[in-house]
Image (cartoon, rainbow, N blue to C red; front, side):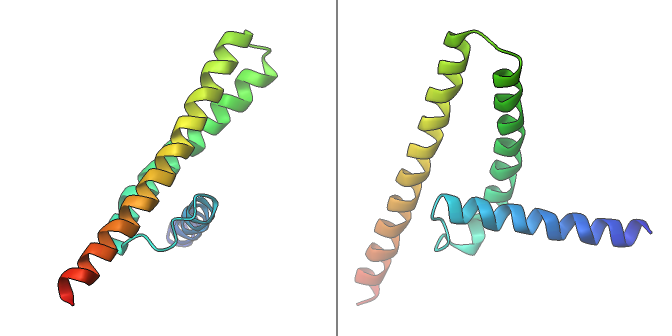
Length: 97
């Protein structure tokens, strides 16, 4: 039974990572970085639950604003990572030519 449970867990994890990659348009990131993306996806999923909990618990406006700003920074970082990856691939292509 445990064997099947781990397979289902792995499939769920793969779906989460694909959703995460689609959300941040990271589909063309090198396969080497997928393991790191999985870890980050797991971390951000946990933070998303915490953010929802803060909203439901009527946390102070300044705490909610801080979480909102940090969330925006995370999104900006993904744009930067994606663009740096594109630049790196372009440089590699130029180097080969």
